[in-house]
Length: 320
Ligand code: TXA
Ligand code: MG
Image: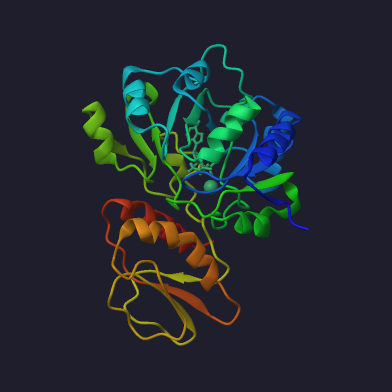
């Protein structure tokens, strides 16, 4: 028996009850599925780290329903308010200083004095936030280091009975995680590329956005504790920038002209980066089959959502 439940009102009410008891519920967002727990409850937050096998130095995103709710948890500078008004609800996570009387578990911040906040745009996530009346800690609902989930079935495959319920809201529209932007010390810094591009951020606050240290360089500061190089990893090795396949490889294609291969999936035959992002994680999973020796991936243009896609692919290909 699976714990997948259609995201209808009665199940959202049951899920909200489970969250209030400190249990974990997976819920859909417009980016990927989240592993939700009461962000004010140390026990629930600890259970999230345990379920994911996530290192406790890597803090979690907290989901809130409104900007007013966010402002009770973190200090919002003028830039933070402008960005929240421009992009929330949506795929932007803001890292700000914890508010003085912040009721959140210190564990969600991994002991730091900052917190990552976002208002998700998915109606089911919004309904769950309202019904539970809780800020919800919500990392992506996958075992740490593995491919993020974009369907309820992906969550069941990876975390199964570690959650009380998986609310099924269908496949995620965007398909890659939110942009994570630090606003600490008044210096905007991109910690993770995602659905919102640095140029869009600069357009709103009129300031350049520093790009955080090269991925994998966790020591380099810029408050990017989650920037571990190996991540999003399929079991099979991944080869980037492929223009042909090697014997035994499956091909993850992009665009209209595709080299010959026995096993092929195309992220977007028309070369559309939004379509490619939405397909990315599901297709990586589908090609991660015992009968292939590796996954060859065609080049993806380094523009717009392509930057987030290439970030995830670089990490999928990184040494483990
Ligand atoms: O799209 C998303 O953001 C999804 C959905 C479910 O909302 N969530 C997600 O959460 O991807 P997670 O925990 O897998 O990624 C959170 C990222 C990590 O890279 C983490 O290191 C960073 O945000 N982060 C969280 N809190 C932080 C903080 N206080 N300072 C710096 N980085 C932080
Ligand atoms: Mg994740």
